[in-house]
Length: 319
Image 1: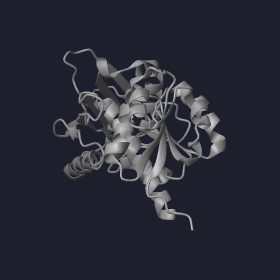
Image 2: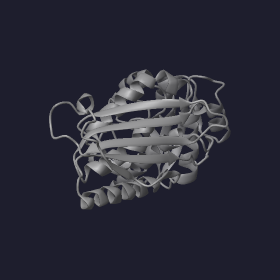
Image 3: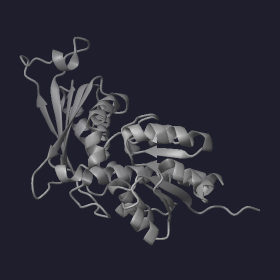
């Protein structure tokens, strides 16, 4: 009789900051996952060196090197922490092998997944896309508002420390805005959405700050109270897997002046919104590997671990 696996092996593709933080989070925070391999393309990367010192299988030959590793068959889940274009190639190479992919790039090959919002809907998907750091931080808030009242327009502004934006983040800025804007609609539930990212050059670096604006029709005090309660509950749900996620100040709901033009934002269809909901957030990193100001990277790795843990729990219970 085959032994029931107590832990699920994962491979991490991308040995930079995000991949290394993933490796350490798997080791320190997960009861269901264990590192099976660390994969990179730079033999001198710190991530590969750390993985080798910890006794994990490593390769600097990218996804083809992973497939060639002796323990490749033991790996069930693959985190991709490379870039949007690299993920397209990686996903194609891994497809014949039946591995579950958790995509931390903006490639968006698979469904968008925000753990606090829609993870249950996509647990069986072969390739799960974690949207972007800004999406992980702000789309739960849009969804929380949309649970109470239709959102005609949602706009998010993600401000991150310039020092926390590595080459991969900078190369994917266009994909960031496109993927996040799309997910605001498809996951957040807004009729229209827009995403803006700001690389803040302040020194010392500031932690991630996010602002969410939603245009809604909420003329009654009861509806407004329900919106605030829904947002506060969602903040608590996200904080369960991202402990540094919090409201920076109270939720603000303000009346929109009748003479304020909105057509460029909401179009001509539907009723005119009566109120703007403004939510101000900050995300402090857990500092497992990345500095605490890099909450933008921490929320991605924390969300990715949350997804992998749920997949692993399902696999273990089905064994």
